[in-house]
Image 1 (cartoon, one colour):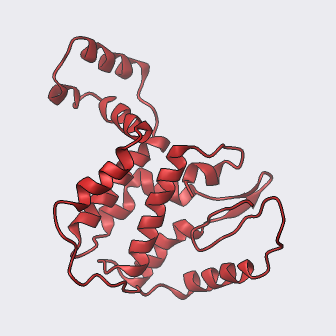
Image 2: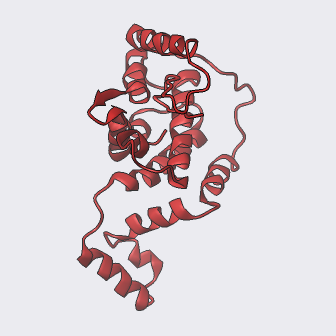
Length: 209
C-alpha cells in the first residue's frame, strides 16, 4: 500500500497509489527472495518499512518509513541486486518518480520560470536544468496511462535475465520474522462478512470486503 494511503485513513485510493503499491511489492519481494549486497540485519532494517503500523486517535496508520525511504532514495542508493543491473535501474527510476508525491512543491517563481521557458520554446536539454522540471515531469509520468508498464519494459527489455533465476530466500533478523508470524496468525481468525478489516501480510497492507 502507498505511504500516502497508510498515513491518511481518509484518503481516497487513486491510480498513483496503486502504482506506488506495485513498487513496494516489487521491492519487498526483491529484498526477501533475490541476492543482494546487504546483510541480514540490513535487510531487516529495510523490511521494517513494510511492517510499520501504529495507532492514534484516527485509527491504525503507518507509511512514515515508506515515505522516508522514497524521499531519501535509501533502497536504490544502498542495495544492489547483483547480478541484476536491470532490477537496480528499475527500482531506482520508480523510486525517483514516486518520491515526487512527498516532496515539497517548487516555488511559484520556479514554476513560472518553467512555464516561460516552454512558451519561449527553450530546448528541453536546457529546461532540464530548471528546478521545477523534474518535479513536473514526474507528476506527468505518474498520470500518464502507459508510463508504468512502459517503464518496466524499457528497463527489462535491453538484456536477458540470468538463465537461472530461482527465488533465493534472504536471511532476516528474528524480530522481523516474529512480527510477520504474528501478523500471519491474525489472518486465520478473521471474521467473515465484516464490512472492512485491516489485514497485514508483512507489508502493512489493508483490505476491505
